[in-house]
Image 1: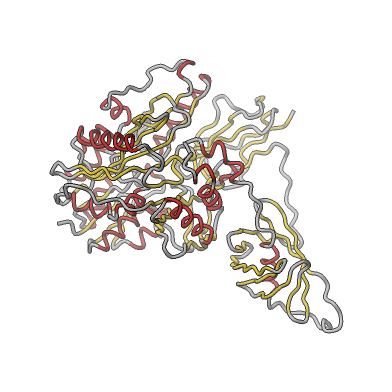
Image 2: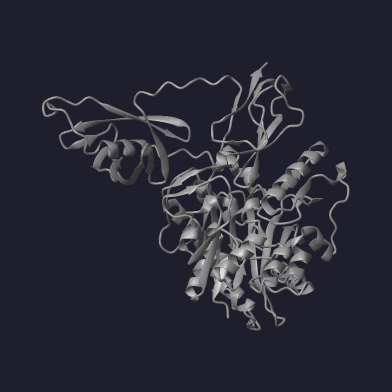
Length: 613
């Protein structure tokens, strides 16, 4: 019987597994990097072991350190989580060789399926050996791992070498394995997958389908179960193929078989030999705990002959600290507050006041809603996200709400190109026009007033706020009964709540302030000083770091004095396990280059200067 489990992962993943272990009375052990010393998963575990360093290659990808940590902490089992070493056969062997229970599939099954190239061969498919113009578009893909890392779409042959280089570097950083391959890219397809669970007694469950078509950078954003709109015959075929794949490698434990569905056909993509981020939607629909079942299987228990019956519909949205309107740039800073309304499941690796750093994935949490119907689940999740208290760096919350309400998604007509088509419209909605006024009135509440106001009208007061880079100025007055503003009636105003009557309709505004950052309902504002400090001008053509990160490489042969073209890639930053390309803003001469590989930079750091022609 398992009594103590070390989770070889971090953040939301570890916290989710710890929750089930705690419910079962199993002691938990966390591992943490120096950057995660005070992270939530470290705080909630019964014991924690330090992995010196910050980068994944120094910490969470060091299998020998994790095995030692399990032994030192007295754990008798290791759960790999999902990501990092979860699909590493050598790590699985190291765990069992140390006398520990491995809560995952056999190493042989991992080797057969964790490498996407070997998995395709097992299913009778072959990657492209040589790419010609007739093969385009193609997808460059990491052979190991998942999560959209190490993937690039190539539409021009001239772009292939650069895509291969970038994919290899990203895969090596994320998974410790730089192997990549090339396959045809299917346009307009839906990403559909099957959750499987197998025991050591020959039983394999196929737990319905999930649709994960809404993706950015090949990484899933919104997932749901069951996949809507599939013909019953196609859904049955996908389930049978998933079971066949599992039986072909004598699979044990939880896994996912993924397909691309296009023109009524299912194209095998890969098998992930691990639990996946989106597993909660399957849990909600089938009324099960997949982690608890993983533990039972690892202990040798048999599954029932048939899985439980599915009920209703579930949808999950991933909250990321990123700015979708600016190339999905990851964000860092303090997460002051994250709270969802009752009835919504929230899996997160952050607590209020935690810091979001640059070393790991940008996902803050995943929110899950379950309802008898798909329409009910979409409505519940969109409404809950809209009302969620989310105070901190820029996130994709508004994008998620609009996506869940988009006619194409509501009508189940989406595919993996959804955000390529609709990103602009989903990120350009105007902010609440009364949010700046509510912020100003809350700030003005209780401030002292000068004498004489009983007989003389007070002078108008003004405040300036920044919302999404745009400045807004509002005006108000102190009056005998409190505060007034042109065009609206101030029903109530204090530091936390403002009630305005606009055209006969009362509206409530919850206001929260952290220094100069103000949150009014779901709108984030930055209070601007009355007299701005002078700011040193940057030279025209200055390239500033859009995020904190590490310079991973500079374009080959690039040096000061070089002539560059508009849009030409100059250097690449790595932040939150993803690469971000920095390109020349205009044609000109590179007059300064401050970026060197390995250099860590803060947001706003000067990387280079391109003097326009």
